[in-house]
Image (cartoon, rainbow, N blue to C red; front, side):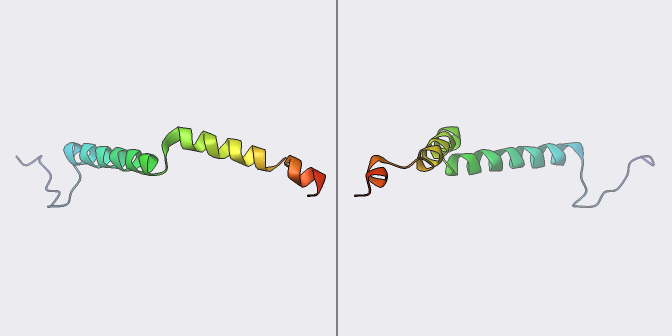
Length: 62
């Protein structure tokens, strides 16, 4: 028992580190779902590329 360290109530041990890592993973997944996931990002990139080229109305001047 003399070898056992006292970390206090907020000390990190392997179980608490695992819980923190799982919480961070859940947070990342939640943020990804909130932002729409990879499909939304792909649509945003396509819209950005399309916006760089003028439309037919812009070219004709009407």
